[in-house]
Each structure stands twice: as structure tokens, then as C-alpha cells.
Length: 200
Length: 200
Image 1: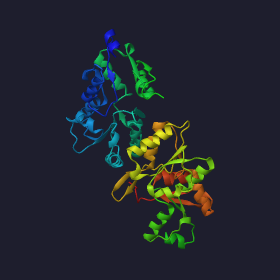
Image 2: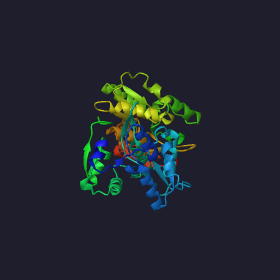
Image 3: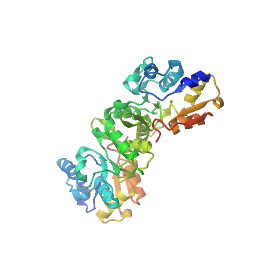
Image 4: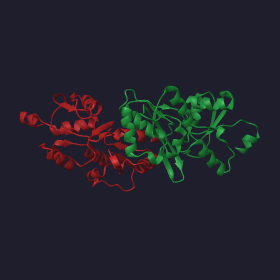
């Protein structure tokens, strides 16, 4: 990271992290010694908030407790859509049934997913990511989720806009063949998969 | 039920009930006044046990506690497949991650699902059925589950064999358009959807 920055190349961190606000995410990275700022982070929750506002949607949130502050300004009364993130311990049987009942009760269910990752790795092992729970709700409600995180084209376009760089002059580096590499390529960028993290 | 039996027509109850053994299922029905015996019930768990034995598979069970006795005779040490039922309260984040990790760790993941229902109705509302969780694991592991309950063709064939009746002389009655009606039709039976139960 330091070498990229020193070289003069522009840098934007594209994360599907939805277990924390960008502020907390950056705090964690800085504590690990990475010199990054909130402005250098593109994340799904702010993208979801823009979409909710544009379309007058009031979300029921099935997300991690620590992500809730990102939605502080959003009207959540009488929900007319469900926003799904990597809720981790909040992925309980009761919470999944609640989100399902809200969706199936809508004339036209609207499911917004902050990502569609299959799984990720933590120190205590692999864990199901938001994409798996998205598929469960999609199937139960016969609906197609709108994905606002990686690999959505709009997500990468938003990161490129923040950099002020056209896709053909950018390269995406990540460990996920679908969310990172596939998404970036769909957007006209080149991409590089690293064999670290959850790579198997 | 009484009128069907009195008319001389043969009857077999085809259930995807996987929250209880057949014995308990019949006990519940009898307590409600329905005169049925265990032999009149075709259910997914015994079908799964036959399949496990045929293929030398040792299951990790993600099922309802009350269903576990159906698998009493099956070797469950050092699992080489996952059997998924409607685990209800056992569909915890930890249990789903455990089943996922076992599957993703297999050279060729084998996922056997006791049904693929989308949802069902209980007195306190609609609930996600086993099919939703099956889709979650299928997506995360990039695997196709083998379904042994309704609407699997083999399941209806087994019920017909117990009746000693060819498909063209049988009619399936149920409230689920996919599991009951679709499955029976795939098998060459006629089918009738009732507008009770979970019908919406």
C-alpha cells in the first residue's frame, strides 16, 4: 500500500465490508498500520443509501449491528424493502423469517443486497457470506435481489469516479474471482487475483 | 380422509415433514382424530437413509432434533456428506457455517436435501422452509443438492410402489404447486391443488 501511494498511483479501497461503518473500517486498518482515510474507501452501505433515497424506499435492515449507523438518516418506518448485509450473528432463524415475511407480504418484493459474496475467511474459519442468505430469500420469495456492492457495475463506476480515472487505466486487485475480478472486468477494468485471504 | 377410506380407494400420505419421525407424525395426526398408520406415510427421511446406505455415505445432519432418531442406524462418523432437513430453530448461524465448512472441505461436496419447499405456514406465521437453506448452501459451495423428498420423482414412485398403483391411476392432492402438484405431474400422475394451508 505504501509503495503504491509513494509511486504516485491513485488508490481506492473497494470493500464489501458490511460489518462496520467506513469510519470503523478505517480505524481498524489504521490500527494495523495502514495509512488510509474514509475518502479512500468505497463501500456498499453509502451506495445503498443513495439508491434508497433516489427511489423513496424505506428499508427493513437485516445487517450487522455495527453497520446500522450508516443508515441513520434513512426513514425506516413502515418498510417497503429489505436491505441485506453480512449480518453475521444477526443471521438468526427468527431474523431471517422476519425479513422473509416482510418481503413475501409486499405486492412487489424489493430486496437490496450489499453484496453477493459466497463466503469469507475469519481467524476461526470460513463463514457464509451475505450472498448465501440473499439466495435463500430470493428463492423463498421468487424475487431477484439488487446487488449494490461488488460485483455490481455501478459500484466500480462509483469508485472510478472518486479516483477520476477511466476504467481502462485502472486495475482491480482482489482475492475473490467473482466479486473482485469478475465485477471489475464487467466494468472494463483489468483485474488481478491474489492468492491470499480466502483464496483456495 | 374417512370418506376416501370408506370408498375403497387406496391412500398414501406423502409428506415432506422433516421435523419429526413418522411415528411422531402419525401420533400427532391420530391425536387430531385422523385414523392413519405409519405404513400409510411416505416421508423423506427413510428415503434418505436408503440412499445413504446404497452409496456408503456418512452424513453430517442439519435437521430438526426430533428427526434424528430416523437416522439412528446410520454411521455418522467422519462425515462425507451433509443431510439437510427443515431444522427450524437448529438453523443457527453457527450450524449453517458448520455444514458449509464440511461441504466446502470435501473434494466433491455431497448435499442431500429432504425437500426443497420455499416456505410453510405455522400458527404464528410463514416460515422459511428447507429449500431456502438448501439454496444458500448450494450457492456457497457451488454444488447442486440431491432432493429426496417431494417433488423428487423417486419419492412419488416410492409412494406408488407402496400403494401398488400405476401413476395414471393415482391423483395427488396438496397445497404446494411445486412440491405436490409439479412433482406428481412429473411422475405421470394427475394432481389437484387445494386452496387451504399455505395457499396464498
